[in-house]
Image 1 (cartoon, rainbow, N blue to C red):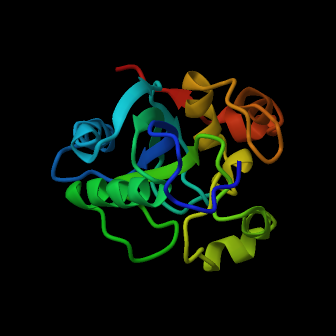
Image 2 (cartoon, rainbow, N blue to C red):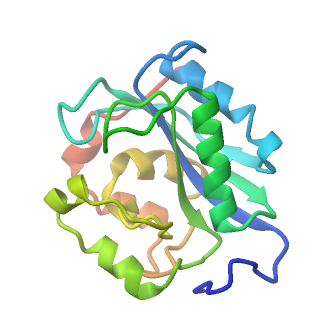
Length: 198
């Protein structure tokens, strides 16, 4: 559904959140930082329902920094999409993240990938950002939240962890499941991703 009013009639919502880090923090390694950030979710009214395995993935774009640790979670909340985004930004800041350059190495990166089946703020805006070419992606940033994440279907480092916990989630625009999106990626996109033994 397209959500025009940020206050939905439903009281409980399910969000898919991608997690990533490729720098150590005051907490420890990238993996330790991400695990620590999960402890802050409940304080932000984000109840974790599922946590993926953790994966090593190459930095994107290629050669832009150390390999990432990536994961994903499903949370239940009564917050609106913009409130969820603000909560994730607070958790990132608590873990030590600053926002200076696009696609820079990161201490803690929490991305709101989907909120129920909401298209936010509208289909036209979603399609505009989904259709950007790579050079534009590297220089342009939306000035508002766009849902589902417009690059979701292109990113193995998001789809691999998400497939671990929500393979049957259906993209509200394309009608394609997470597992189908993952299967459509080129094999070389998946070749360097490996599960982390914890």
